[in-house]
Each structure stands twice: as structure tokens, then as C-alpha cells.
Image 1: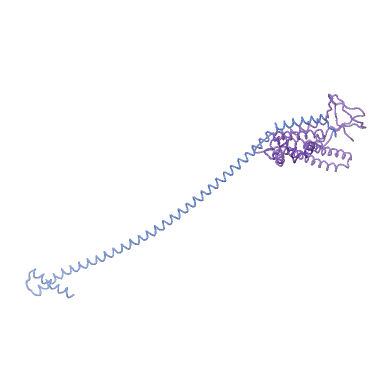
Image 2: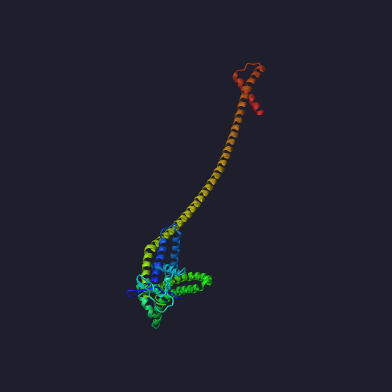
Length: 255
Length: 161
């Protein structure tokens, strides 16, 4: 059973209500967790939540330390933290349950006075309201684009000469097309890897749900695996972010 | 897979807002506290290092002081030993001198006593001999010639003995 995305059209622009809602919810959860962690800050006697948050900070610091000089990487610590928290929370959100509304007969419901858009022919209309924000390519590509644009901007800002030269003399002009392909492929792979992993996980959950009672053990296993995949993907995304930034701000002339 | 452009831009903006909020209200104070803790630990490590250095220096000083005290005690004992043996020598020497002096005194006394005894014997012998002579020879002899006579006899006696 395929679920539609609940979209409405306002002023000629399509809005995916579920996606907007999930973006807001994920951001709120991340922000609330972070605020809870820094509510009772203490230098000598940190609380449990503060310790947990500091552990995450140190984790991201170690990611940065692996890819570049920690001193140069300090400005990207907040970015890495936001990325890893937001992506992890997003990945986890789609796992525990889902909210689906179904249409009665052929009546198409309206939200905020706008009728939901139905594309194509469906024998049974149902809309999914709860899913991971990262299970949508639009959102993961937005995150990937932020990171890639940032890495290029930092490359130009910090080491413009080296940044432009490495396209044409690494090792020589013949490799320019390869560099250009890399420029395009980096954001694609970064965004689509995350999207593919999380989307596949949610599709699989849907398939297992279709199995009925027999699927419960499989569901348990798959949920556990999805948690693992979600954690790994948030780590990978942050890691690659730092790798790309460090590649473009690198100072060695012979790189 | 379809790209919904509204989602794309909403995600861009939402992430930017989330990043700004987190940096402003969560990470800034958290990083501040972590930096403070790092400094605290650094300070404590430094002070521990200083304390250890001080302790080592004090121990070294104590050792030297102990060494000094031992050396002084040794010197004092040595000095006392030499002083003691010198005093013993002095005492023995003094005793020896004293005994010699006493012996000489005794010898001198004996000599003097002997002379005195000889003198008193001489006086008594002269009186006795006058008495004996006057009784034997029954003759009036004046003091002068008497003494001459006795001296002559005593001379004889002295020569014979």
C-alpha cells in the first residue's frame, strides 16, 4: 500500500506538509535536548545530560581532529555538532511509529482550506504524516548543498590561489574534467547516501508491516538495525563534511 | 525520488535557523564551560607539578642538613676524644711531677733530720764528756781548754768511726 505525501498548493508552490512538520519537530527536539544539556552548566560537577553532550562534542572534535589540524577545524565544530545531532534525531524519528490518514471513498480532504494534491490514479487514498525528514531527497540534498557550498567558500576564502590551481594542475590540465565531475558528484553522493539509507529503512519497515503478525521478530531486528544505520549515517555525513572542508582548505602546495 | 523544491528551501532555512539557535544558546556556553574545565585541569596539574618540585627541593635540603649534622657530630666526638687523651696525659704528667717533688722533699727532710740528730748528738756528747772528764781527772779545767780537748777527742772519734 503506497502512501502519498500530503501536499497542498499555495500561490503556485507545492508544500509538503508532512515534511515541513517533521523538519520543525526534528529541529525542536534537537534544540530542546541541547538546551536541557546546558541548563545547569557546571565546570566541576557536570550533570548527566551535560556529560552526554560533552561526550558528543568530544566525539565531533575527534572527527575533526582526524581530518584536519584541530586548530583550523575549531570553527566547524558547531556545524559538525548541529549536523550530527539533527541527522541522528531525524533518522530516529521515522522508526518508532507512523501516522497515516485515509480518505473515505473518493473524497479528497483539505488542509488550511487547500485540497491535498493527488497525482496519478490510486484505488485507495492514504497519506503518511510521520516519516524521517532525512527519508526525503529534497531535505538531504539541502543539507549536502549547505556542506558543499561551505567547503567551496572556505576553500576560496582561506586559500584562493591553491583552490583554483588544483583544478588545472593536479596533476595537469587533462584531469580538469575529472575535477569537475567530482564537484558535481560530491553533493550528490553525500545527499543521496543519507536519503537512500533512511528511505530504504522506512520502505523495509512498511514491507515488514505488510507481513502481519509473522513480521514481529523481523520488525524487532530491522528496527535495531535501522537505529544502527541511522547512527552510522549521521556519523558518515559529519565525517565527510569535515573531509570535504579539509580537502578544500588544505595548504600544501603539492596536493 | 522526487525533489520538492519547497522542501529543499525550507530545509535550508530551517537548518540555518537551527544552527544559529544552537550556536547562540547551546554550544557557546557549553564550549565556554569545557574551556574553563580544561584551564582548571591545567592549573591543577601545574600546581601539582610545582608542589612536587617543592617537595623534592625540601627533601634535598633536609638530606643536606642531616649530612651536615652528622659531620658536625663526628667532629665533636673526635675533638672530645683528642681533648680527653690530652687531659689524661696532662694528669699523668702532673701526678708524676708531684710524686717526684714529694720524693725529693722526703729525701731533703731525711737529710735535714740526720744533720740535726748529728748536731744534737755532738752537743750532748760534749757535755757528757766534760762531766766525765771533770769527774775522772778531778782537775779544774777552764771552759776554753775543756772545749779544745773535747773537740780533739771528737775529731779522733769522727776519724775512727
